[in-house]
Image 1 (spheres, rainbow, N blue to C red):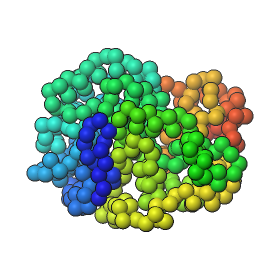
Image 2 (tube, one colour; image 1 turned 180 degrees about the horizontal axis):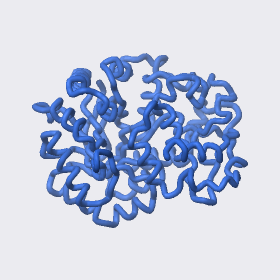
Image 3 (cartoon, rainbow, N blue to C red; image 1 turned 45 degrees about the vertical axis):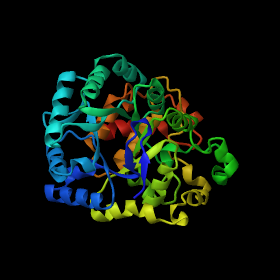
Image 4 (spheres, rainbow, N blue to C red; image 1 turned 90 degrees about the vertical axis):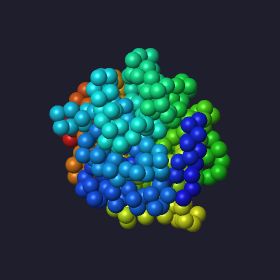
Length: 380
């Protein structure tokens, strides 16, 4: 296993990490087995955003006696209320949930205290200027958390956080589907050296984010590196070609400032598929050639989250709604986190007025108004 410095935190994290969300659907024995197997492969960073008491206890029991082997990302604002996950900024509930995390993890500290799921600029400013950030800072001053981080899917929020000097690292969604901007009809252009010198096929906002994080020494840990598995099948990939876990991992780890990609594991085989990256050949890591050979029509009718549809007269973040919808459609049961993400948007599918002005700007002929209706139906 290779280890990378997580920005100004100075922590050396395994470049393959453990995103623990999938452990919610396993028994305590299975959780212990997967965590032990991750340890044997050199994985040392674990993200637990979940508030479910059972999975927290299962993880805590699995790492008992070897807490110092793990760098833990624990979230502030992820709570368990009336038997379900609720994101909140209520300090009383936040404090209660965070103390529950410490208790169930059988520890007196969390390495990375993550201000949980901030996707809108107004909310970011309210948090930074208000009592929520002061609460996080107080925890750091007391040594209960060692570093203050933030989780977000919004590149503008992430960039502002990186520039603030107050956030030490960021948990951010990174994969080719979320990043690529088809700015040319010749897809081979995306993978020429000269093209990448100018930011390549990555959206300018994301290219700028990675650069600013690197410039400000703000490390990135990666969530949704597989796009919910969407990239593993040609029929669900926006490129109409399938990528492997190793190729997705290589894409994420080649972004500036990225230190670790946190993958979800249901089995030892899933762990093996990820850590295979450490011994993979350059040919096995090569996602660029695969994408360069993708059919020219691969983007037709599919949202690549490029943002050309903006602005929306109703204020909908169309790319974000489409992203959440695509992730939801990939799964038999929609995770509570996705529902909460959708509901927390200041405007979503229910606010679409079907003016279709966005569709005139979409390079790929996406039926955006219909997708907004679909999103509201799926998440209702």
